[in-house]
Image (cartoon, rainbow, N blue to C red):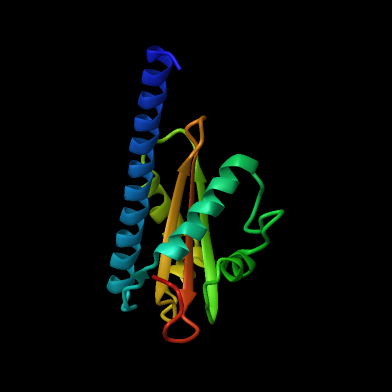
Length: 161
């Protein structure tokens, strides 16, 4: 490996790490804003779950790569199948999806879009949901893909954190 290719590789990895950090920060900001809205409407705050967030990131990444419509992944199924495959126990689950292109602020756009959609808002305000995770990815074309998964925990001690 030449010095030049090593430097290009290192710079590419640093840029990728920076972008990944930006996307994880966006996911946490969406989580915080959703909890603010829940509290304003009398619903309890949800807890962040890293395993659920990983499922959400995987869904966003597959939506980015495959560009399939809707909630059902052609190979992995719906949110229930994906949570089961990840070993995450749940009593009830739901999922909000968002995709946008042409703007640099997926946080506010996703939250506002979901808030003004009755089905998405119902997921946000559903009081039985106790744990959530958010995944954000960005395509080479600048499109953002956002997934938020909500669960009602099945039993104490399940792997949700």
